[in-house]
Amino acid sequence: MKKIFDLENFNKSLVFIRPYLVVVLLTVLSSVLFSLFSAARPILIQLAVDKYISPNSNSVDSLTGLLINNLNFSFSLFMLMIFIFLIIESVFQFFFIYKSNHISQLVIKDIRSDLFKKILNFKISYFDSNPIGRTVTRVISDIEAIGAMFSQGILSVFGDLFKIIIIVLWMLFSNWKLALLGLSFFPLLIFSTMVFQRLMKKTFEEIRTSISKLNVFVYEHITGMHIVKMFNQEHQELKKFKKINKQYTLNNIDSVLYFSIFLPVIDIFSAVSMGLIVWFGGVIIMDDLNSINNIANTSLGQIISFILLINMLFRPLRSLADKFNTLQMGTVAASRVFKLINKKNMHEQSLGVNDIELYKGDILFKDLSFSYKLGEIVLDDVNLEIKSGETIAIVGPTGSGKTTLINLITRFYTIKNGNIFIGNTDINKLELNTLRNNIGLILQDTFLFSDTIYNNITFYNKKSKEEINELIQKMGLMCFINSFPDGLDHQIGERGIFLSMGQRQLISFIRTYVSSAPILILDEATSSMDSETESLIKKAINFLTRNKTSIIIAHRLSTIKNADKIIFLKEGRVMEKGTHEELIKLKGFYWNYYKTQLV
Image (cartoon, rainbow, N blue to C red):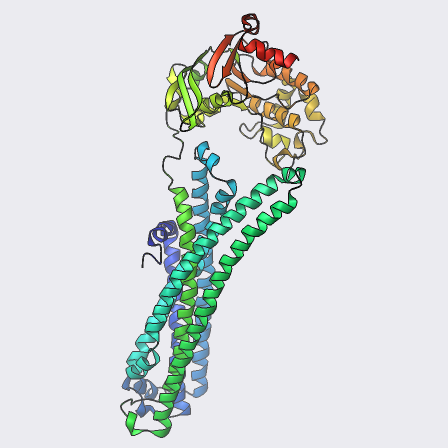
């Protein structure tokens, strides 16, 4: 059974129900009562027929006969009682449907929050190796499938199972031989259900995989639409999309095929069972055949009751098959979600020393080596010292390891060989949030949120507009902000699409300055600016680096001539270090690199 139904992930999902256990129990109770009143109606109809339409109480079992003999109210009042039962049944049904879906939304809210919390604490290396679309699928559509598992599956299953038990017990107690006749196809139905569930489990896994691939493809191509159009690849990419979409469609068609086979099978079993009851019961009542007199104590009301009960019995069985498929889909999705939640060695370690003063100390890179992939060395035995308040520049050809140094000092990646110290403390022993709060980072590929300039600037440090304007004035960038129609309230579009690259970087400069971090890192922060913007930003850099320990990575050497020290990296190794004038006199790596930019 474990192969058919993933109990492990099902149980993990149940953990999220615990905070709402009282409401869940009341919902399950309402489902049970709804099923009880639903199953009672055919029994009341049997009593009504045998008492008022075909008075023949002596031919039914003693309990039913006793009930009939003690009915002392009119037929109209009896019909009213059946109607009242129907109303009560509807009330319980309403409560169950509403609360089960309500609980489902609360549960998936908690699971989604828990998952997103985990994702926020993942190492950067996770996002390097996992497409964004796949992670989005886990957070949205997979969790929706888990929600359906609660609202349409697990909670209603209890009521359906209870209804089945009540119906079977009543049928056996009322007329066990007629009941066995009606239930003769039950073993075949159970076998068919097990085969159906096995096939559907495989299909659902394929559907979830197809959804993930579809999300990844759509996300990447919408975000990269400029590239698609630039290279005139609309037709080719449409072909690829159609291929993925076709596979997703085929997987869904497989599930439809299995449903199309299984559901008529249930209807056939139901119809044949009711036909057998009508045939044998009718023969007994109308012809009183001696050859089958052993099936005694059968009345017209009982035949009608058994027909209704068989229909009610097969209906929840059919419903259970649907719900079991919902459970299957939910547990398949849960296995993917909990695999992500339970990922080991993927979370950043945040505990450590929390001393703000320490970030005003020196920074030391000692015997530092690093590889993103085994055998591909990016940094090789790097030894550097940056004095507190000093501005150093790191230059070198593409792929020399400049950005990797930044990734390691911010602990985006784990250091395995060597050490980085801030104020004589290994950064691996520092409290992570405090470490990053004390480092102002400006990247070449600036990311801005779809919001106002003000909200992007105050993403970390919530200062008033007056305070922000004062700080911008100090940086000499007020003219830049005033160039926008709405100033700080200007909407920049998704990822700052309405801004130039230089404008995005200027906003990033202001955002970093507002954070007041004592350590400043600029990674190719001026590489995409025109000469006018670069001139503006040079003034801002001089203002930003004042009284701060600053690391500037740049291809354009004109921006780092005044650095206290310049480090030249090549193939992950420190080849030269010194001031601009000292390195020019050496006529080595830096001198050659500098000459190429003058040509």
